[in-house]
Figure 1 (cartoon, rainbow, N blue to C red):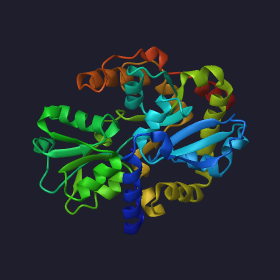
Figure 2 (figure 1 turned 90 degrees about the horizontal axis):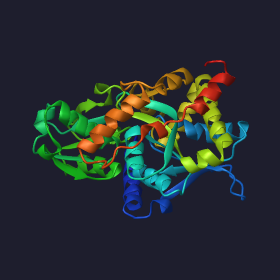
Figure 3 (figure 1 turned 90 degrees about the vertical axis):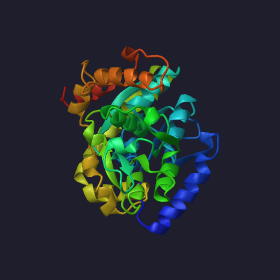
Figure 4 (figure 1 turned 180 degrees about the horizontal axis):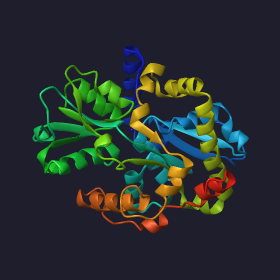
Length: 346
């Protein structure tokens, strides 16, 4: 779910991103943005990538909120979102911020991961952007459409196609890493693209381009989470709790220091403060109350269980998952419940 403040910076970013994602070992391109991990290796290796709902981790690092909550964190930035997912699956980090459908895909493929926190819901920052002359989803038929295969914007694209009565076979799908997909669209190599903020800003620089539909049209379809390996949760639950506590402390700090923290997040995103503020309505950061509600069992997509069931079915239908995971083992609400009890919001 990438912004650029200057055209020259955009060009430099795309060049560096192209170099990074062309390599096969994602671990090579992990960047430690701010680390309080000691040489003894007792910290939490926490991954994140460019999405407005995850930039608060940068605030936590720079304002030493992790340390204030007695946890050492090796915060690792990934230029490529898919690289962060693969690195968590490989056990090279302990936790990662990622979408629910990508977590379900990983678990269905054999990964043992646990969702412990809802960071946010996408409410418009994931978009399908099209070239001039494409005015409906039906107009995508036969067109070249790029997105990063198996990730959230591919999922959004498939949701839109299904809503319009089309199948994946009705388009010419071009699988590209999100940064490359945006660049391919801007250069006219494809007719449409599925990207998330801040890549949306770059894609919309193509003359005549426009948003065809977004995650706003599919409320609750794209929740974003903090996901740990089960091994880490089982062996070091106190550190998981400290990370959860630090997250909510960060949200409180952001509320009281809005301008300062927007500057931090905009800098991490590589965009201007003004550009970053445009994303406010496209991402809904979840409160502790909203977290507690989301973790309750339910059949609609306001519940993680309901959303997980729908996503599991859909991912299997379109071939992005071959087996349905046991969702009863995916969600662990004890840490948000413990935080709520601390602040008397249970």
